[in-house]
Image 1 (cartoon, rainbow, N blue to C red):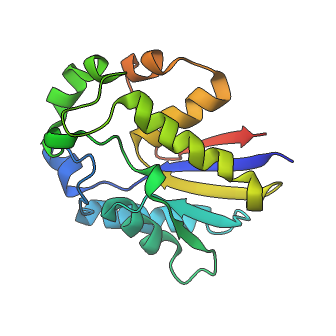
Image 2: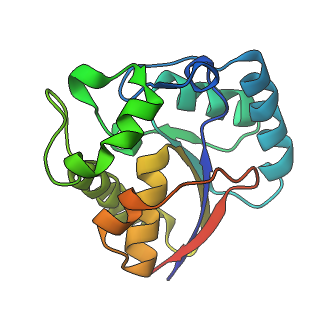
Length: 179
């Protein structure tokens, strides 16, 4: 049976506000981000979610905890939903990471991973969902790599095209059907 997947990115972080590409660093939500996370919970709590899966990076986990803590909806932490590991460039200015991102589609960042590796990691999480959640609706809280993986799996778009494309955040998230 298909799985309905809703994707929400982590709420606004202090690094987002400063123009930093956090990568695998934990990051923290800003005051506005904490308010956004609370709004996410109000918007999504009554949508029949069977579970919330979140990246284990602090900014995503904090989003999930603010939005769904105490709701009775299980929050499951999965490191595979993390952002791309920019290696020695974690914490670099976001414009620098964006400018040369195509150089790292299939070549890892120094000390990190490539975008293809990051997307393949997230795809393995998606492949595991039917084991327990077939026919249900789940929410993922992740990062840009999570979005790219879902787009890759559901549309077949090549990873290079997804990495090359401009990305626009959506305050209402994205909906997908897997399976």
